[in-house]
Image (spheres, rainbow, N blue to C red):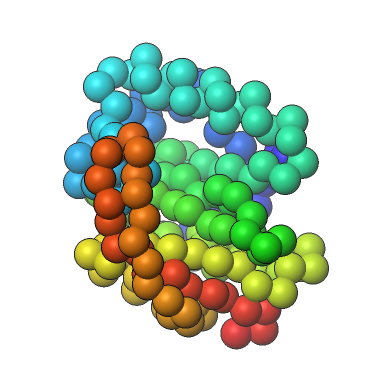
Length: 174
């Protein structure tokens, strides 16, 4: 699904293959950012282009919602936020942000806007997970109204490792 959302400081818009260089240098090649993602750092901008080409093709699916986070003031791509899947009919959100933009409230702003959109579409609950070591992401989730509902072990095949995940639920009206 192609959709554009806005906040005071951000534009959330569909990714484009032309975003590859900004995504690669901003976060896809950064081991500090990708250590909390399900995929490994990209070795080249070609890896990022290939991923973006897959994402762009997925926009034909109505349930696929994957948005680039663009800083309005600079028209700069700084991250991404998406519905990575559905669990029991509830959307599951995932996100990432270039390290240069951490601790400025951008992800809380983007996540809050996507949650508002999903709730406006009739969803009553949204799920968000974060690795137990990812304190920054857990703060974002809590600021957006997330309540910890459990912890589990999860195997990440692309990284060939098992991690501990905190699972949160955000309810409409929270």
